[in-house]
Image (tube, rainbow, N blue to C red; front, side, top):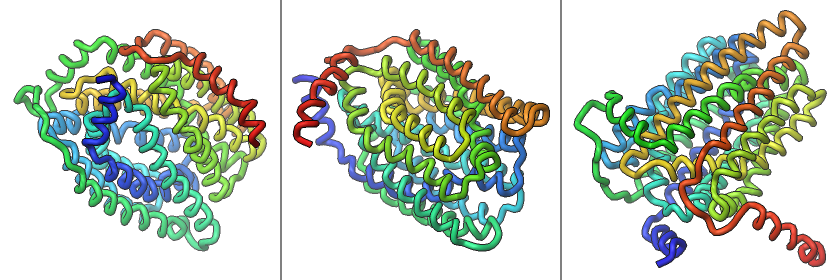
Length: 434
């Protein structure tokens, strides 16, 4: 039986419809609020350094407890209970955000929410790895992400339009989106109860889920995983430096409205959704490594656009570029992580990867925020931000090149050059039909 036939058989035996429904419902809820949280912080008076803290906590908190959650998932041999419980707790925590009065309160509440909700993250990753055959991981992951992207895109656009019409305090402006996020998050948790999963063998020791012995043993024995973690941390530090400053550019430099902020995310989401089917097929046909390298090096353009932007239109262009890169890059990263982790340790190792990169993102965002405050105080708002963007861009180039050291664990039926040539060869016939 060929690999593709095995993949089709595997997909037929696992009903993935609840995963798609959960993705759409959950992303619609979070998409109504999550893209605006940094703007929420700015409107509550957050400085550049406070934005650095906010972004750092947003990066670290979701990953802080993922290793014990991932180990618990592997020890139980079940994924769904942790996905449901984590989603419920994260959804309930949208409610306190209706009452925050300062950026510091916002940071605390979102941090607690992220820690509680992180229970679902490694279990969700492992569940997809469990249910989907390796030959179809790119395509199925792209399809699930596309479903989630549609929900998030529509929610972000609707929430951004709604918030420009609501009058009152910043808390009142965010009231309806927060309620929608809470209710739909709870609804997505119920959907996961429809998933039928088989209990899997537990190869972990009887040690506590907080024990690092099994984790370090699994990591040390997997050279591909160790290398992937290392290069991702190098790149992640410089990538995350610019994150706290993007909102300052859009809100304080370019005076973007809430609807314009929403459209920045919507443009990126629409491009990604349109290209994800092609991206998923490409990942499965040519492999992950080349696409990951292109993705990481391409992200150099994002801080460059923000550094040079003189209108919101330039941020829309940056969103198009980012959307193209994400369409195949995120899928390639996710599929590669699943490729290099064994089933019995998948929850643990994916959680470990998220933890170490989350710590790096925490440090990078914190450094970026404080560098932003320093250079803004020295050179002024616009030039100070540009200096940090330049540092981030140079670091992204160096970090992106480190991905050339990762190895492809499998062989694939085609090459990137062949696939792109086939697309180019079809253009004349498409043009004639058009």
